Each structure stands twice: as structure tokens, then as C-alpha cells.
Image (cartoon, rainbow, N blue to C red; front, side, top):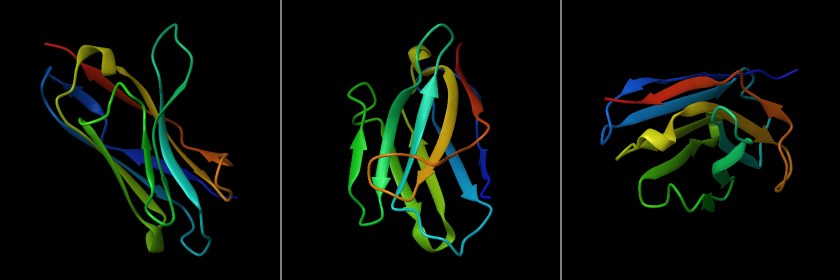
Length: 117
């Protein structure tokens, strides 16, 4: 079994930045896909950003130009740099990892991000 552990959430003012990190408990396996989802109160979970083992990335339109996803494949670690944060970015952010290229097999426990003045 693999566990994903997120860190880096918190409270930030509008316009501020946060960096989320996620590390898998086992570095000996390879994930082709890693990514970040978020879920705001009363809303469905949505994909924020994803990154393949080859480095290709995908972003939700609402975060393009503000968020950057990156990974260190050898350590099964993925990051989400979030800049110019807005109140509407407030949500629980979940890390996800998958063996394939279009689905996720493991999920983190979530980390709260709150953007408020």
C-alpha cells in the first residue's frame, strides 16, 4: 500500500503564495501520473493540475498562469506552486498518483488552503 502525504497548506491573503508538497511513502515504484485536485465546500472535486512522468502538464483554466506543478520522479514527490491566490482558490487540496496516464490510484488526506484577508 502507498500513502501520499501532503504539506504546505494554510491561510494566506489574496495575492499571496503557497507551495504544496506531496510525497509518496514508497519511492521504489513509478507513477506515470501525479496531480492535485481540490474541493471547495458545496462543490465537486476538480482537477487543478496534473503532470506525467515525461513532464507534460495540464492545468484547469482557472489556475493557468498562476499555478505551477512540478515533480521529482525519483522521489515520487509532486509540488504545486500557487501564486496570485484568490479567495475562490479556497479549498481542500488533494494529492493524487496513478500508475496509468489517465486515472489515479492513490489519494492523499488533503490539506486546507484558505485565501482570505
